[in-house]
Length: 522
Ligand code: PLP
Image (cartoon, rainbow, N blue to C red; front, side, top):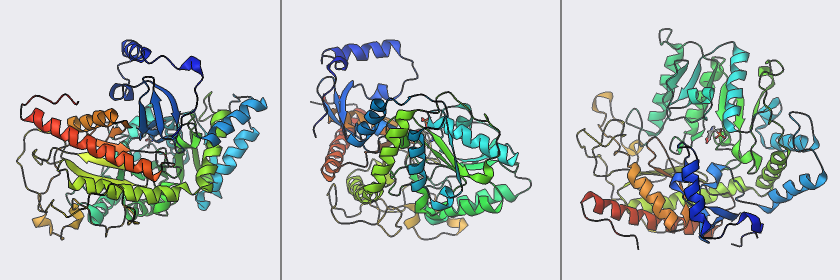
């Protein structure tokens, strides 16, 4: 793929890259993140390709943490930005009305579930997803007059105080933490539809038991697919149960679609898979077309907060609104959500074929082009919770990992959607097992997460020109978030490079474990 010609001034000579990286590590905060695992100096980017100052090219499956729905520097995005720049329009207008903002809002409302769009209000927030989460929580607290919040294990909603409170790592008493359904690390040990139903019943019980210690909450906040939590798509039936449970009790349901929105999961908005209509939708990342933008859209009857209730200087980023409107329109007109569903399910099948060759893959999961490969220590103890690597008694999973497979990185035949429960998984899920009475629940535990192996896979991917993200509870999930514009050829290249990286990392990991010297990665 060709890469746009850069302005010469911003492109350092290749030998300067090392200096830039050295100065970064000397001057930037210890809290920096991606820069640690991805020591590259991007100077040009187009579509899915990033070029480093050293001339190396990479396929970018990080996409600005899921922001770049159309990849880097898409022509329609550049054109939209240039049009605003050339028009002489003000770039900064607080929350004043402008034609650019009007066009963005019109395009956004056009994509929303009609039941929300018809009665929708929009609040432009400070330019990060976390500020939109703050706004949503404040809105719900104002509308209900209540304080408490229902949120889920493994959630990630951002880094400001309220969003952190709602996230899985928090220890705040105002937040009641509820189980998020998942198969491989199901808190009830059974996964599948039954595990999800138990999670729903737990939620119901917490709300209805007058002695549960959880007062009536201001809202429930959830991600339809947990991204940072390790790529966990919530079952549609569970989402519908959450909608019913909250609606029946007058609890506003906030869907955080900061990461899942704009076609990423194979529907324009991830809530469309289940058909639920949340009361509040939190949006950021891709809606700004690669520039910072964040909004909350909610039903009009919640709109009872006073003027200035959620202010902020940077709520009027005209370039982001123009880039965002162009992105939303392009995704809609080119049916990129459908493309994400189709290619995503083929990539998922390819990853599952790959998994069948590697014991270290605990689970492959995802929805659309939001994919994850959880890496585990297959020889490690299978502990309750599956988190640590020490202690515990090893137990055999009661199912066979040797499932026939074909090693075809990107199947061309249509595959069932990831939510299709009939689709055989190369590593059978707990929900494939027969039902058990409470007394003979199998004591099956997931293998311990292997964050060291995941980090090694990420490094090996980078060496092969592939940028991937790590996520999940133990940073052991290799995440793929390619742009929705990824071609079939690029998808095959991603799977090939990941397969090679996995083999290389596994080999060096094993050698390290047996005390032999590590290979020099020639
Ligand atoms: N909500 C979700 C679901 C996210 O994934 C993120 C970021 O990854 C946020 C909120 C916070 O967004 P931001 O990093 O822009 O503050």
